[in-house]
Length: 314
Ligand SMILES: Nc1ncnc2c1ncn2[C@@H]1O[C@H](COP(=O)(O)OP(=O)(O)OP(=O)(O)O)[C@@H](O)[C@H]1O
Ligand SMILES: [Mg+2]
Image (cartoon, rainbow, N blue to C red; front, side, top):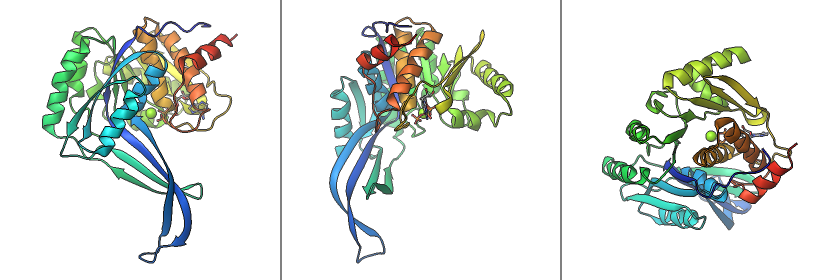
């Protein structure tokens, strides 16, 4: 595929756990008088949307129209997360739950090394999740593809109901899974585990043939049209009823692989919403992932970069 289709008509609804990735960079020159720990004098900070918010911004970078539905706390981090995604053209419906903090992963970095990571996370309350489900029903009508980005933080408590509603409405449903119980993803169109997520749910495979059997069995059990296994430096494999299709990884330089899975599902969703078939969508997603791993930080791929990379293919 040399020409990237027009993705500007693609309408995605991204639902899942959002988080704010924070980085505090500083200088370490002394040990604290209070405890045997280094003192970091913070000199620079960085913030990036993570989880489902990163999926959403990856999709808008490719030109798609994206609504993000999730829960945040009634706090400064929640406000910041909204500002960050809105600046990237994501329509954000972030329900505020005053009883929880916004999920934040704060890294403290001194002398080029991570000294500490501090996580703030609490499961959202039932009331807020119920409100979110009610809004989900009205947002669903205006999308072509539903992306469920499960980071295991409790925001997808009603996932089975969401899949049921989306299926009844004839939508394409993509799931980025977590954990070892995939029964709650039953009825999805496509699930995209990475290697370790796959191992967690089907166990260790002994050979490629064994993997294919396990992947196909899992796919059938879920009633899914496809299962896309992302395999880091080994590319990705697509399992469908018609068989298996593999693509090698595209990356020439690898700087930072974090967030590559978010880029993959965002590109797949934008392509499928534009009417592409699964093998073409996988090809574009693999190409996008190959670009994003060459960038530092949880980066995104712009439509123009992806277009240029595809045009260079033989
Ligand atoms: N080391 C690598 N070299 C080349 N390509 C890579 C590498 N890591 C990732 N990729 C590309 O990114 C895709 C997704 O990566 P991976 O399977 O690691 O997803 P992931 O574990 O869900 O990522 P993350 O959770 O960090 O977002 C791969 O299928 C491949 O195209
Ligand atoms: Mg992932």
